[in-house]
Length: 583
Image (cartoon, rainbow, N blue to C red):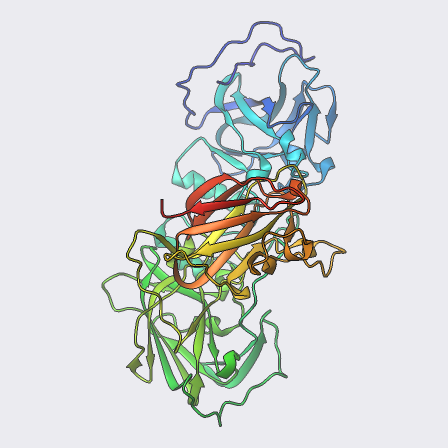
């Protein structure tokens, strides 16, 4: 229970009266009004000497950030400028001088910060960004916080530790709302630096408008782009002909850059047993992953013989929003930018949206690559779940189930559909977990603060047989120590996790990756159709046992199915953890 320190400490940090306890029935007030706001930092997450903050944002009922005319603290030893935590526009900075911390172990009362507003204001929202220079020093962040407005408590509670902010692309502060008025929240969104360059969708009815009403997202300069994960890319290049400008063709590489050199002439290609000659390909979008009123895709690519991406002129149209459907062929597939995606209205029970691709001549295809809608985790549910293909008006043998996009770009989420190989296994007779993406989150180590690793991972199907995984099935974020500056060619890459050499002391058969601030290390096992798995075995890191994983969680298609502790290895013995998913 939080304690009251509103009137018990003098400016020199000495208690002048006993502290009382707050009621457990405390409720956050609606739009409290005042001028003097005090933040009482009751304790840190685990640092015995220092406590600190990154940024404090205060929004009034007008939607604008409140202007601070004075700030003070009772702490005697501090690092950083106190005023900077109220005026910073770089809430994710890890520069120690731009953050603020205070030594509290010699004080008899908790550290507090008092800010004086320019006017009496109704407070609508406060956001706290915790201390986060490094994963270790994030423990200096505030754990329990009390907020007083003109000596009246308006908040008491726990603030998240910065390194636990598991939000895919960038950390977010702890938001404390003092109103649910939608008009006020919309005004705040207009001035919120966290939302100006990101997706703001007030309700499901705004999903379609978001596709065109918002400009492209621009990364904040204070947040470096996350290191990419590794998953072998399927796409190489693609040539596009706009339906409105049939005389112009564009060739793109995987990075969306123009490439006028690489071409593939398919005009004289002959059909084989593995490909299908197609002149007109129809895609009928039958079902999404749960969004109430829209459906969409990020990208499409066609595969010719030997799995080579097709590079020929084609015309693409759609039954709805045909003007933006060429985005699906622009090569910008590893993205969360809505302006590189196609999103249209959808309602179950009505005529499904249809995409039509016309080739100049009958063109041999062996498959299609899909990148599902990926604007955000929430909007990934607008992605296509079931799709029917038509080759020159003839339906493909079965309806295809597409994998939901992850909502982030930690790995290449492409799904390859090969026409002669797409045969999802039948549902198992016994109750068993089945899914497209098995994700292992590595939450802590056995002592190392900077690196974490594993020797291997094994998955077993419903018959308790080892699943043979290929490089395209595995991805990790961060991929390995090779993402670090000055590190190149280190053999401890994520492919080693599935090479079958698990109980080993040879480092070249292990996987090691850095622990990044505000990021959770992840391993992804990705399938192109739902795979039933009854058991996962994790083999812990042996070269330096302290770098082995300790706490893990396992999720299947975003549903957490296990959390627990992995035994520590020794330098001579590999520890392993069997995770049973059928219990």
